[in-house]
Image (spheres, rainbow, N blue to C red):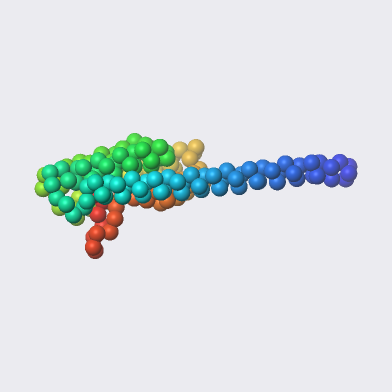
Amino acid sequence: MGTNAGTVRRAVLPLIAAALALAACAQDRQHDRMAELRHQVETEKQDCDNLYPRNVAGPEHYSQRVRCFNDVETRFMRPLEPFPDLADQRLAARKALAADLDAGRLTEAQANLRLAQKKVQIEAEERRRTQATSSISAEATAALVQQRTALGTTCSQVDAALSCF
């Protein structure tokens, strides 16, 4: 019986090693893909900044900037979302706030505050859904957070204030 166990172990060990090597390779490819996506997102966001500079005013200035940023997020980040409808809500809120900024109904600080409040609401709903859905594991949730962090946000520091528009 000891000889059979040894034979089985010798036969199984190379299979386990091969499986581990494949898993490491897949993880490396995913890391490389995320780096490519991050670069593409950064490049396209920079294009938005170049097309619609923050410090240049004009009719529909905020709306044009937000449309550009929302397009980038829709193409690159939305497909990674477990709940794309929540991403759509955030993008729609930013679009509506940009229209209010263009119309002079809000200051940029007020719009940023409202967008931050919407983000908190969406994150709470995402947590609620994640907890209610057993198919989304803690690992998948952590991976989502990592992907979002890697792809960045459209908010940036302007002088002492944060701006998402």
